[in-house]
Image (cartoon, rainbow, N blue to C red; front, side):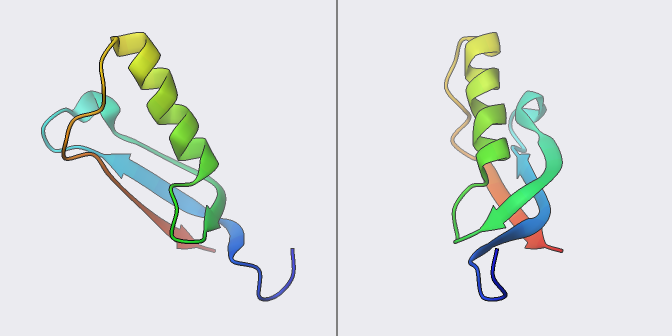
Length: 65
């Protein structure tokens, strides 16, 4: 990972005010203005476990370390 790499180690958060069952935070590679892979994996796990699509207010954010 170079100095100017768009993806770097950091922390992410996924949340919904309507349905907190979808809320989670974690660490991993973040950047490129996209949902981090670990956060995407969390959402997919929730979809399978809950048998439903994410709430319409589901958001994500991240911060590079």
